[in-house]
Length: 362
Ligand code: SER
Image (tube, rainbow, N blue to C red; front, side, top):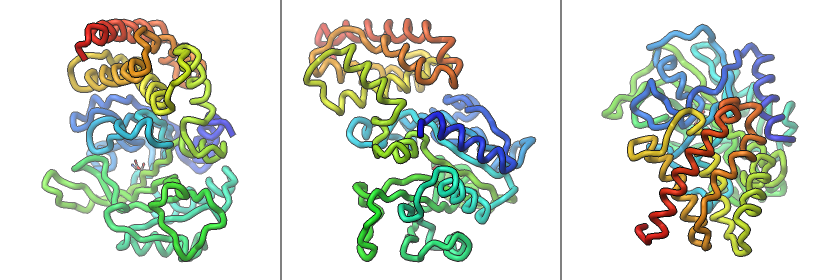
C-alpha cells in the first residue's frame, strides 16, 4: 500500500466517523513562542485543549507536517543511524475536544488497524500507564486482547508536548515483526522486534512551569501515528528510508553524487535533511543565524558535510528539489509552486558553505 493511499485511507476513515478533516497547519508555530517547530499533530490545538480557545468542531482529523529538531522532541542526532528517525515526518492524528475519550479512541484506532489496514492482531501489543485502569480495562474487556500483550509503564506512558502545557496518560500500540515470539520473554525495548506505532494520548491535565499538574475542565484525545512508519510496516520493509516516498529520493542522490563508496548513513542524512529543508523553505523560512533559520542552515550544512566526507565539494542539494516535487507536490501545493525559489535558496546556501569548506574553515 502506497504512503499516499495510507494517508487518504486514514483521513477518510475518520471523516466517515464524524471527524472534520483539517489541512496540515504550519510547521513553524508562529502563535506559540515556546516551540521552534510543530513537533506533533496536537500543536495547532494546544489552546483548545487548554480551554483557552474555541473550535467549531469537536472531532477533527489531520496529517500534520512535523519537525523534530531542537526542544523536548529532538531526533537530529539519531538520523542516519536508525531505521525510523526523521527530522521531518507526517503525523496522522485524530482529535477529540471534549467529545469522545478513552473508549472510542481505543476502539477507533483498533478498528482502523485491523479492518482498514488489515494488520493481524497477532502482530499487535499495547502499553498503558500503570495508574490508567480504565484503558487497561477497555483493552482487555472491550477489545479483547490478551493480558499477555499489555504492558504497564510509568513515565513512558505519560505524554507532554513540552515541559509545560496540555498532557496526560497515553496508551501506545506496538507492532511486532515476529509473529512467533516467545510470549514468556518479551521486551518492548527490543527494537529488533518491536516498532512503536500509534500513540493515543488522553489529555486531562495542564502542567505549569514548576511541573504542577492541574485537571482540565474537559478531557480530550490526541493521537499520533507516523505516516512513514506505518507505511514501512504496510510495505514490509521496516525502515522509513525504504518506503515508496524515500526510494526515488535516495536513487536520485546516488545518481547525482555518483560516488561508489557512499555510506548508507550519509545517504539517509542527506535524504532526510533535504526533505526537511525543502518543506521549511516552502513555508517561507530562510537559512540564517536566528532560531528556526539557524536550524535550517544547520540541516543544509550537515547534509553538505556528509557529502564532503566522501569527497563531494560541489552543490547538489538544490538538484533534489525536482524529485521532492514529484513525490509531494500534488499534496503539498506550496512545495510545488515555490519549487524554483526553494532551489535558489538552497543553492545560495550551498555555495556559501562550500566556500568555507574549501578554505578549510570548517
Ligand atoms: N502527541 C502525541 C505524540 O506526539 C500523540 O499525537 O506522540
